Image (cartoon, rainbow, N blue to C red; front, side, top):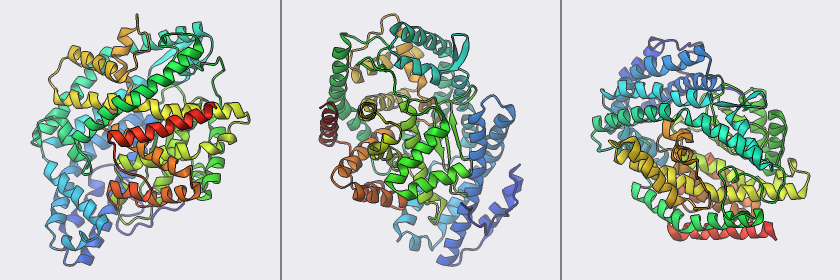
Length: 569
């Protein structure tokens, strides 16, 4: 795949200082916009520069997350966010003002795609405060401490140092004494960082609140909603989602867990029981290596749509993948869009589990989205909100299930994998609601103490939990379990999108049960739009409703429950 041919930025540009890009910014700032055509060209040039800058920062972040202990990678990223970004901020504000003041902007607003972008620019102008530049630089650097702390977590097992991701595989083993021993080692290791992560979170809350108050907001939640461009729903919509999940999803999760307990001959789970197969079967192992996982995923995508498989092949050729877990690597997984190149980068921590396969397919869905939107006119059109981005990834998880025989020769294993996927689709929703509700409270009550925060988290465990896990003796682990959620530290308020998109994905999959080919085509059409239409319109193109009311969630829960019953039949 070829990068766009640059027409504004020099091909040989090396971004080693603010001064290296200053001439382009000066050009944009001083250029005369005497017509609609000139304004459009100005936007395209600005977009090209944004793509170059964002891709440069992306590679710094990617290299740092692959090797968190590499001081050079850490310094390169830190330099960008502390030395270059802060100097870009006032110029970006000036360019935004230039755009909105241009008399021809109203001509562009007749096109929905440009109208959406201009709406976002107006929001950015309302939020911009010069005194926040240093605060944002501090936060950009500080948030990376979570990756360093969690990336350094490991345990000793049978004389070997293993990552937390690999340790988690033992929680699926049938030997309960082994599960208990590994769980306790993991819990002890995480507990050792409770104070460190509490202090980090306290600092982030305090600084984020300063950011919000500087911009005239009562709290960071309200500031962040505007910054994230949540034009199509409100905080009240989030509360409605929480209530609907509590009312319609938690009872289904409890039913699933009760069936598992009954099969295991238990009345309560121990904390190390929740991931194990209730029927006494060994954990699913769909692949042995990252390469095997990738090859299988390409084969699955080939059956869904050969174009999708081609995208992953391109990424493989370009070495835009780092898939296996290893010491010193940041936790989690992501698909990082590279707006200029067009082919994104997939990062994850595979250890051979079914969960890893789901993650690979999930990130593959994001990758498809990046490829399909590469030719859109502006970088802004390819930078879509998470509610749209996660629809791409979560729908692909469900649409791919019919072809998982690429990984499972045994029919029973294939059925188990599908069942685990569907159960996970449902059981993740209460956790999403809990994390989101936690964030609302944290920032609405930003002067809270650590003790008050812990007490509220425990209240939420009661609200969104099933009460079927006995945490006696491990209360500290439960009380600090929120610290495992990277989003709270690195990307605040980016989590309910998973819930909203999960509902959309279930809808896409529901449609596919009656017309698979049409559902995939609708999915592809929706993804190709990027952010050139509103969220509800993108969802509509995918054939689903953008809503999360109680009746809608109840309908989707009933559908998934019926599909699970078919797998049990």
